[in-house]
Length: 225
Image (cartoon, helix red, strand yellow):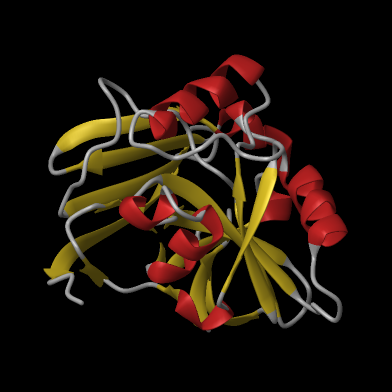
């Protein structure tokens, strides 16, 4: 995937990001209370507790897109703010904002299948991880769902990238090759999961004074037998 990388000196350039396999990590909070809060959010809509935490859900690599329009089947899907990590042609790890959009109805049957049902949305602009790793924990992640602030927190609330890749490699199918991943998410604000149609994703670096934003709309197709 051709993408733009913005360096900390303000210079941007095009890079080729590639991966052979992609995993959506789940329940990756460093704080166990936050993990349990997300488990409870999902339990309220009928999703059973995971077999273990963190959990790794493998998704079709071609389903990752920087689209601004996402087509889904049925009304019961929702996005969740995360970061997406992948390497460029020189092996540099890069990060952007993302949404692990998921079919919540199917999730009550199989989380793994629900992850496959919707394409995964990522931003068009990336940062080099080595330029932000020293202040990674202070980077701010926010999601707006239909105009309302839906999620808010810092990356310090989730496992660091090195640990996520370690867990993913331990779980990876044989012959996985180059790996990209979604980080897992933050608990939602308010009463619980909302099935929205317009999402705004924000990754803000308070140290270098910059932000990655991405917006996408959801179009619902009829769910038929």
